Image (cartoon, rainbow, N blue to C red; front, side):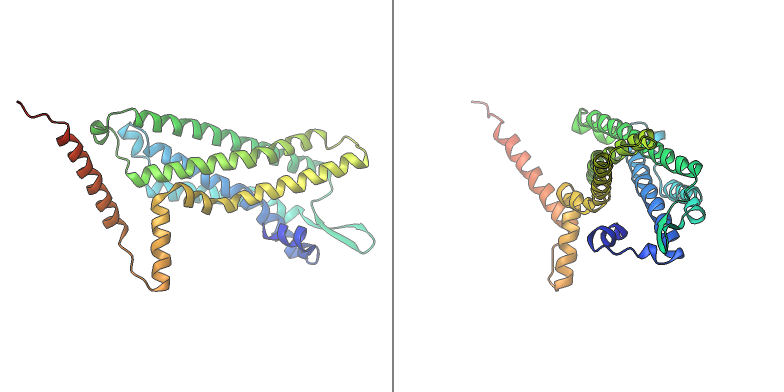
Length: 278
């Protein structure tokens, strides 16, 4: 994202000035483009497990398994994307004109094109599947009477809020990720077809526009949590009040007060509906 800001916003191409910066730029781009959605998928899987009504399934939702999964995924993508450190270099397209780009061999270009397309399609499919199953679990839990929920599942109010936030994040990723995935698939199929100058200009514009939209989607997480999660808003409010030196009622006390108030209202409504015998 930072590289795109310098490149498209200020026309500063630092990666074209040094071989090491060139390799690190492409390697970091490949790594974070695959690692970020992978972590989101793992978090969605964890919320899917904890929202299950099966006790044995909920046991798989643990910190130990989360750390292990994230570690394995990180190591896998670090190794898988290491080709950028080897094949990416400063390519001389004209005398004394060097551009940071892939190795120009057709085999490697095919590998990059098809691997990017396949990875993005797989990530989108996984997101869709997780969203569907998470939505079904929540609907199944909501359909259970309130007095029986504690006997069937062990999700707290914050678990529901986090599940809702992750669901919205998955939807946002799908909306923005599907566009760039479609372009990657189209580009992998038609990259050997010679087009007119206008068609090439349109393709470059679509690539830059969709890449910007896709990278901008990573900045929506903060706004998603602000809009969806009440607990996050309370924590943010408490942090701001702490910074400016003001006291704020702790969240738990405020939640307990609200729950007691709701319980009192329910009791009042119940009492008011009781008819005394004449």
